[in-house]
Image (cartoon, rainbow, N blue to C red; front, top):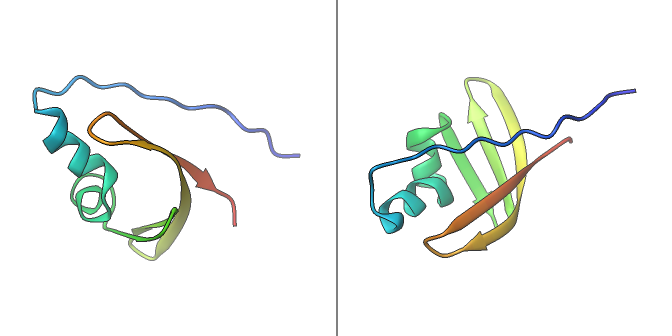
Length: 74
């Protein structure tokens, strides 16, 4: 049986909330900061690193304040 562990990270950035939100909540921004490529269709996101794909679902989004994704097991 596989066990799950909750994982949360907080960082302080010296940037406007609007600019930072764009980088952390859009596929193009996430592609620049986090993964080689990110695609989205509605609430479903695909993160691509080399030949590996990981999937996530958008669970919460509040403009210029918060964007939460939950990684999926497929």
